[in-house]
Image 1 (cartoon, each protein chain N blue to C red):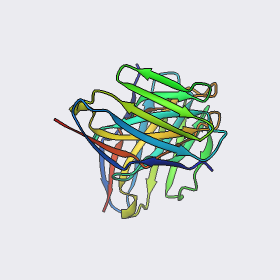
Image 2: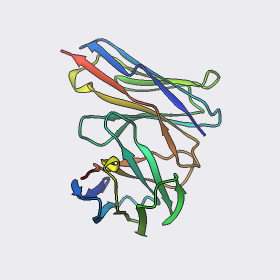
Image 3: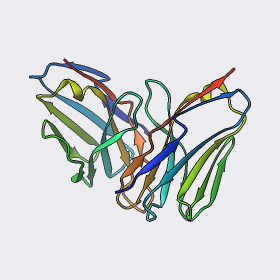
Image 4: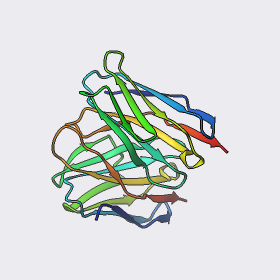
Length: 114
Length: 112
């Protein structure tokens, strides 16, 4: 399996809802990432997990809460989001060894906050 | 931190012509430079990458060149086809930091 999968594909939520985005990979990768991408913009890094430990948090608001239950799964828990949080949320993974790491992206979850 | 600038923001070419997209980076320690293609509504997909110990790499119609002294790298697509139409992102990485800094993207349109 050489794919990163994400669920759901689309999500519409109100500002008071709690929801979770899920990401899964079975490539044996030990680094996993969450990115946020607005329309016509590049992906912006949110979080990096390495060997199931949070290694990078790019000053993301606490209404976004990542979780890495095991080496294949990555979740992003959402609570009290704002309309400006509407975006495509991309998960990625890479081997966490050596100096050069190709990142494989999932198809993304398109989030709309009402 | 690293800063990557990408030009042009839009590029239109006739089918069969070549397309060139250029990026500059700020951190001389960056050592990995991937290029991603993102079609509308799809995920970014790696099309080619280059490491700092190499000056040029080619894969069929796609090539990337790296000038470490000037801190810039370029994507060259020859014999363009309509299916090459997409947004292309360059990126730079410090490798062990596992962080990619992306350029702002180039919307390439290949006119039939």
